[in-house]
Structure formats: structure tokens, C-alpha cells
Length: 389
Image (tube, rainbow, N blue to C red; front, side, top):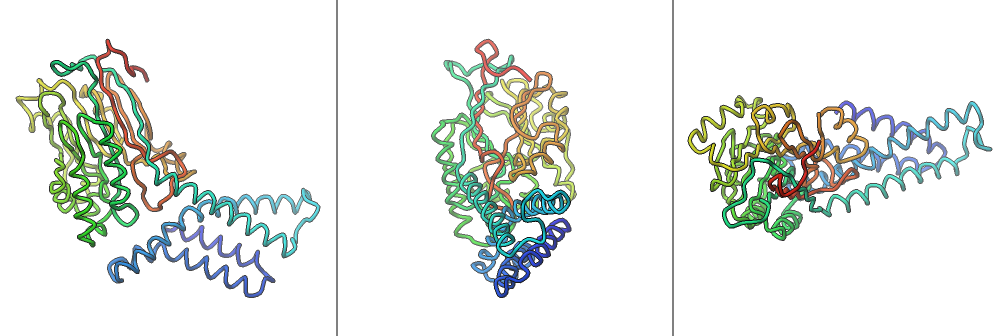
């Protein structure tokens, strides 16, 4: 929040100074700016004190503001750097102090560019794509009588709540069902916050949509950090009524075809929940049936400590959480935090896929990557497929 305050104070001061001499326009523009800047924290601080329609409107204002704030800030910094250099070496024919017309043109250009980028990002965030990868695994055996790869459909970071509702969820469900997967996996952060549970009609509609995933082996899920923030018990009950099986540090052998290991999210430690090692999960949950599964898949929301799955000898780990940064330039920050922040990866004999997520958080804008539905086709090495770093 400190960074947010600093950015907005800087932009407000620059806007106020730049519009000097513009009369009522100065007060109007700065007032509108302040209104949008305050709407983001207000939407979160007042969420439980105002009527739902009003808080939805305030929250949407604040969420929409995030993207133009970021790009407005970056463009303002660039303009200020140029202004300082121009004052020394006179790059332009009209060095400072600039005329009112030049200053208005600069403000208009920064505003216009920020809005255009935001609108493009909103369209991008609302148009999920299906990303398909083929993975070859030595130990994988096809089911009896089958000659096709095992197809996994994975979704992470849907973030059902104030920004994502049934309309968008229906898009995701329909796109998954068109792929005819063998199994559907939800990789955490299905729910954004406890605000989602304020409207029972929306909760019921979302539950009905989640129950309409169509696959041979059903839909399985783990909880992400936001699911814990929303209330792990409430999210588990919601997923259960949606016909989604939730794994919390549990392993399950699904029809002898796939061993799923669903790990507790790291955020659970804040609530006194201890996270088990993979070996302990398997030994406690499936001591007798572990060896007959033909494929071991680890579901772990946050892609930290990737060596754990490799050391255990898992075939595949699926994660999300990073959003691939979602909004430029945060993708560079995210890439510096994680060993792998997005995409396909391999360590030893273990394959990894870190998804950019199917939804958004904080703002309904995505200027880095696309919201994605991940399809992983698992085949035997002898039949080809991805087998590299």
C-alpha cells in the first residue's frame, strides 16, 4: 500500500503542477484523478459496510484504475526525464517552461495511451486460450485397449469474486469440455476472497457450472492462498457441492491410471496448518495403491522448491499462482522470484508446467500473456512428445 500511495501522490502533484493556469479544468481533472485513486483502497476497506451494488461499483472503479495508473506513472516518469534533459540540452525548439497547449497535449497523450493499453488488456483478459503441450514419460502406460495419450485439462487462478463471475466461468467450462479431457484439475485460487460468498445466487450458479465439467475421471482440486484467505472450509464446501474433489495433503489413485498428490498451500501455515512432505502424503494416503498408478502428478499451487517433486521422482507437477506477472512490467519481477515463473520446464525426469492462470487478480486487465486453459497430453517416450529442458 505504501508504494500505491507514493505513486499516486507523485502523479497528483505532477498533474496539479502541469495544469497550472488551466482554470476550472485543473480542479476537475485532479478531482476525478483523486476519486479513482481513492476508489481502490475504499473498495477493500468498506466492502462489509456498504450495500453490495455500491461496493461493486467502487471496487470496479478501483480495479479499472490500476492499469492506467501503472502506465500513466511510467509515462509520466519518462516525460519528466525528457523534460529535465530538454532543459539542459534543448532537444526541442520549445524548451521549458512549456506553454499551456504543450502541457495539455502531454497530459492528453499520457491519458490516451494509458486508456488504450488498458482497453486492450481488458479484451485480452476476457479471451482465454487453450494451450496444449505434449509430454513424454518413460513409465507411462496407456490404458488397456487405448492408443491415445492421457489428456489432462488444468485451470489455475480462476479467482471467482468481484472481478470474475459465472459469465466468464461458463467460457472456461465450455472450452474445457470441447477438449474431451480424461481428467480436470483445478490448481488453486478458484475463489478470490470471502466477498464471493456474499451473493448466494452467484455462488449457486458458479457451483452448477463447475459441476458441468465433463471428463472420464472427474474434477479434482487443491486450495491456493486466496482460497485460504476466503476461508478454506467455505471453499472446500463450495467445491464439494460443485462435484469437485478437494485434495489437502492427500494422494489418491484414480482408477489405476493416475496418482494425484494434492498439496496444502504454503499460505496454510498462517492458519496453523502444517504442510507435509510428498513422501508422507503418499505413505499416509495410499500406502497400498501407490505402486499401481501409471502416472504420478503433483498439484502444488505455488511453484517454490521444485526440487521436492524431482527428488521424489514424480512424473509431472502442475502449478499456478504467478499469473506470469499479469501486467507489464511485473512479469520481470515475478521472473526474478521463481526458478520458473511460467511455462513448461524439466528437472531430472520430472516435468513441470506453471500456468499463467485462467483469471485475473486486482484488475480485470492482462497485458502480459493470455488467460489460459492448459491441456497436457501425456504419452510414452517411445511415441514422441516433449522430453527436453
